[in-house]
Amino acid sequence: MAASAVVLWSTLSFSLFLWFSAATAEENTTSYSLSTAVYGDQNVTYNGTDSSTQPAEFESTTPTAAPSSSSTERPVQPTLSADPLPVSGQLPTPATSVDRLCPCDAHRDVCDINCCCDRACREEVALFTGCSLHSVSGNKQLCSRDVASYSLGITIDGYSELQSSVQKETNYDVFCIQSQSGADGFSHPSPALPTDSNFDSLFKQFTSFIFGSEESSGQVLSAELQGGSGYQYGDVMMTAGGRGHRGMFFLPAPGVTAYCMDTSAAAFLKDQSSQCSRHMVLEQDCSTLPALSMDTYTNIQLFAGKENDAALEVVPVEVTSVILQSVDGTQTELQISDGEHLSPVLLNPTLCANVVLKVVYVMKYNPAGEIVKVMVSLVLGFVREAVLILDQEFQITFVQDGEEVAVHYSGNPGYVVGLPLVSGTRTADGITRSIDPRDTLSLLHTAGDQDCLQGLHKRSPVLFSVDSVSGCKLRLEDAANCSLVFQALLDVLRGPNYPQYVASFGNSPLEYPLDWVPIKNNSNPGEAQSCIIPLSLHLEIEWTKYGSLVNPQAQIVSVKEVIQTNVTSLDQLSGGSNTVSITSSVAFIPVSAAALPGYRAMPTIDAKLPFDFFFPFV
Image (tube, rainbow, N blue to C red):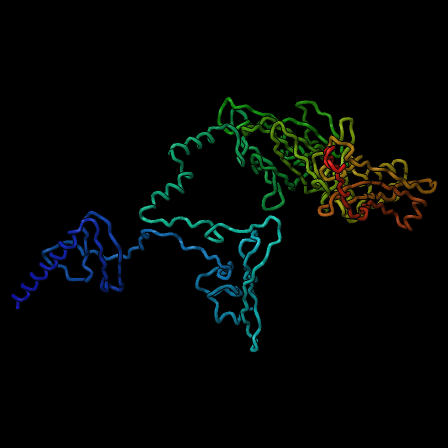
């Protein structure tokens, strides 16, 4: 028995040797097909072609007991190999038939609900409630194209039934495409499919622009960007402190709550406008809280760039204007010399003066990102003890050096409904207007029990094609001096910086005064009374449609201000109460003429014939 086993082992070894020699005789190409037996819980199958000059190595696919003394090598575990790249080929040709296109088919081999063009939907169609896509077409620029239509019908049993059709539609556009030469239908030519042989060339083709042909090109570009001394978009601007210390430029802004956060850094080229509140104790914080002092926002020096260089230029903050707001809201511009500051002062235990209410920064920068000039405008005011919460407003705007501050328009060219009217004042050089979009023709903002002569008066800009009415209450005890009350009420109704002209179009240039409409005044004085006051201010704005009927542009042609005064005594107007209602309103009146059809004149023939044209008949 033992002898038979030895003979069998020798025969098997010799056969394996001959098989191995035959397999390695061909060095150029070795084709093999191996099907492994069950190994553990996996079936492993591999088919392929190996192009190599090395002898092929084969592993045993049937687990056998390793000899105890003849070999110390561990058996090699078979692994699952990924599918190799194909030798050649192209991507599948895209479908060109519209009945095979389905944009709503989001899941492969799965029915998408209510997707009537999904070929995976069979029995599910009976439960559809509607088609999410009713038609599929090809290139809409073709003069003639196929359109696949889908709809649902109801069977006698109440179930849905798919109804589809393919029809040819005609595009009557003058500039349609008569024929399409692309062989691949609705897509670009199919790209080459990556294979073992062309992978390196495709990789270089599609990645050469990203990585660059030279390894150092990206490093040089990065070094140039980092080498500039100017700020970049979003960089935090740096300030110069004492003894060479560097700090950040902060602009207070509300945090999670409405209270001010003084450690909110301002970013370069990011315009910001915020309003926040502060809780203060008047006697303690009037002269000690830095946020109330003008010096906190003006005594600042900014570095022109972000580089930590001792030779870098330092730009101081220039104070352009300081406006003092009284207790009743009246504003007056103060004339302050360079270096002069107004510090908060506690006038009495219930009143603090020179408190900062509004700060507006305008920063100019050059193309290199360096700050060249910083300007600030402030509004100072009074705070009473009754006001426990102080509201402050902060703004910052960036303007490139050499450019004017951006001016907001209300149309191009015609006015847009809902945008504020563009207004200004006539000067010798033309029309001047404020860069603040809120500083325009406005009306009183109606508030409950708003007093005409007391407190602050909020205003709303006059919006194109939006009629509105607002007003306030006048107490009779305040109207003792009629001559003063008349002008005070008129100023309240008109608002500060009342304009003289309104732009006829939303983008009327300032240098063309003829494109601006003057505001005409039309007063309706009442009968002679001992006390005459303005009861209402009404604006009548006439506008028309200008230009083509296809795209008409709104143009203002007339603005009239109508002031109505009292015709009876104030006691009779009050009706027994101690208040009189004062109103302001605006109405937009369309005055467009009816459109008339226009016909072109028939062309005249101006032909000059030679003198012998009819020879020899004439």
